[in-house]
Image (cartoon, rainbow, N blue to C red; front, side):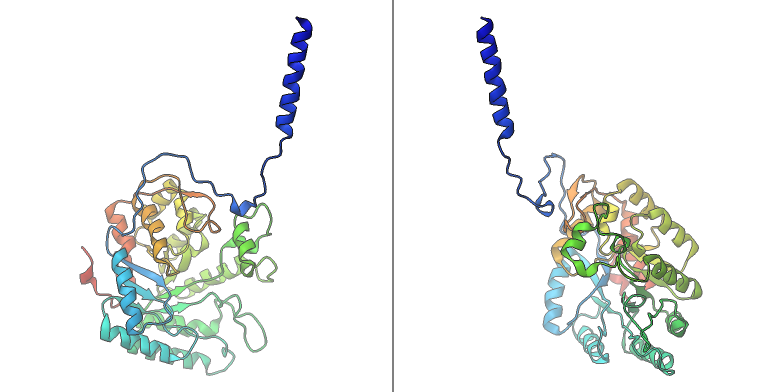
Length: 368
């Protein structure tokens, strides 16, 4: 009997060892590992906003009649009442701006707002400031309703000597002041997510994005993220009569307490949620409290024109859904949670705040 028992134990040990030695199929990279959640909870996959909204952060490089007709179809599906095209001039002459404004005027005058742009390459020219201010005045007379500043200011824009042009360069002061005088806002994108400047290692939250898009890395840049951001804030302080829309939550979506302090300090600063909804969606209680407290200072923005991605924004802002994926895993490998904002807050973010800040939007398209 004892021999039989020993034989059985030995057999089990061999069987277990063989099972442990059986190789597992682990040939998979981290970026491929994205299992669907087994969580069973209510889902509300919205494809249309609850209220008509204004997208204050969009880029359209062609606004010919045929392109506008297609845009309108998609906008109507989303319940987007007004699109703000920030790339009026793009990086070219005023011809693109004139063509866009004329096309809008003839076809859909209530549905589009256009911002103009300026160039900094000739900032050393003694006449640059005067010439740029004049261009701004003329563009506004033609129908531009704001100024968009690309992120090259403070990062890649250089003067004739190869020196980086600071965001708060005094040669630009007259431009910011003119915007305040004309009653148009400045929507400005400065720097990029702070993680782009950090070491690209296992502690970097944006590692996957930087692996897939190495051109976004700034970890070797001589200018620090904090330097660019502080220049931007200093520029806001210097021009209190001009309204600034700080793009992408000013890259403080992961530090809402800091963003709140900035909004308290700078009453002429507003912000928008383009490309950073993932930051709000992973901290639903803190984000809801923030958007409630600063409901008069935050606007809806998306940035890239990908119709299907708007659903994530609507779902985060409007529903109480739990643990749902972001639409770009390399932006956010974490899951989203809905904020279930009340209607009065939603209306301000979707359209009321933009109506206050951006001139000449037809308010008749929106509920009171």
